[in-house]
Amino acid sequence: MYVEMSFLRYFGGNNVEVYALVGPSGTGKSFRAIATAHECGAELIIDDGLLIKGNRILGGISAKRQSTRIGAIKAALFMDEEHARQARAVLEKVKPSRVLILGTSVGMVQKIAARLGLPPVSRVISIEEIASPREIRQALTTRARYSKHVIPAPTVEVKKDFQIYLPIP
Image (cartoon, rainbow, N blue to C red; front, side, top):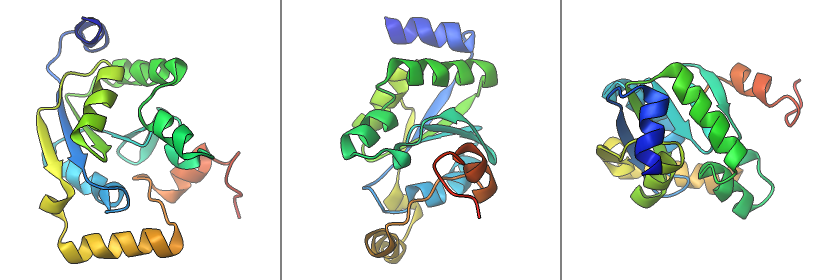
């Protein structure tokens, strides 16, 4: 009941399609998010606690900046009520017709959609559909070797939003 009511409240009854890009952590989902969003016509990307439109971070709290794994999971799932409320406010303002949510499983993406008052996922895209086994292995190697994390927004936008956390050279 809460999901249906918040869907109507936040989207004025508009039809919103929710797409999911799923795959194990470190397989290149965030790296491929912008191209995937473009392919499926999604105006907004939800990735690791952030709401991203085009080349701008519109809101959220980055799970990648959390100090613990539990904190990262909570941020990615919008478990903090204030974080979820702020994200719903962004969704209400933007009124996207299509949203792409990234997650490690369909269940995770469904939980995010429910927390944000979005309708159920209408299409699931597996990372294996858009990346070759070699590209996935390379992404996993890069994550393991260099602990690199990608946010699907330009570096300038990320630095602007995270200057408290990241030193700007």
